[in-house]
Length: 364
Ligand SMILES: [Fe+2]
Ligand SMILES: [Fe+2]
Image 1: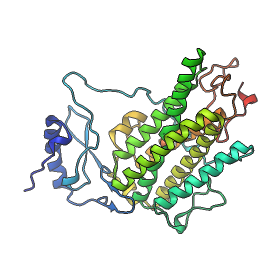
Image 2: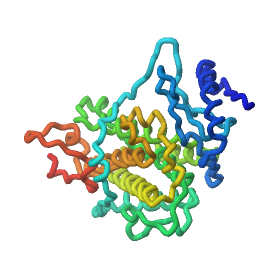
Image 3: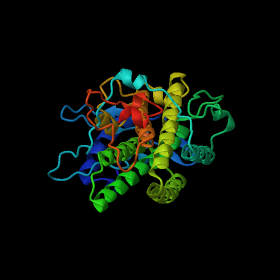
Image 4: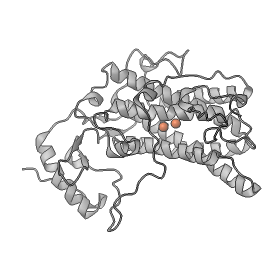
């Protein structure tokens, strides 16, 4: 009989014992799984895809069971200490209604100024590089003439290809909010002036993007090549964004607005391919999303499929899209952040509903 062994260097002895106890019945119940795929393209290893609820009455914890035993591990298990029960998110998610998430649509803000065009063509070039590096074939590309809105392609992507795109996209998307928030924070300190509410929104955006990345990382471990690409991209991208934000923050927000258009497009196409039945590993009834996602988005029981998860993430991206396109229209030094402001008539802006963002005169 197979005796499950867990490498104690990957987790605490207590966790190792618990994982060991839970793995045995799972392995016995399912010796094969539809998701033991290993993508060699840019190296992602699909692991924590099927999630089984542990039925211990004292625990709602789950474990991940699809990977062969020698690869079964949680990439970043929560640190267990003698006194801390849990460490909740710094910025709890505000949540969405189902109707709000389903109402999100891909959109595009037509570039008009020189800065808009610069940001747009830079984004197009970045997208082309990502498609090339991640091995997207010609038939898998959607209509070039509608790059951020067309969701149909001759051939769908595989689950592994989607994971590569998600992880690469999210590792990039988490940078600008942190750079912008940091630079505005430093400027506020330096100039001895208020920031008028931008910093928190920008930092929260980068936090939210990181939660997207961590969620995907729970389901898929990048290989060395992917890690190398992420590292290189971050090294270049962070520094470029740092300099660019000092020189022209408006163009940077427009660029992020276009990046978010890409994100909404990516997730919309993934949802479309799930609906079409092209991604069976994600539509398998046994599939459940990781705990980190359930907790962060407060995903209700019965709505924890991959499609549900992508609906939440897409709604977040739609919010970032509206925020950044709007911030790109404002006076960077003087204008307050309309998304945290209280209006005299009581209105509240919902950025996910406006793909093009609001013009300055509409919100001030
Ligand atoms: Fe994201
Ligand atoms: Fe985003």
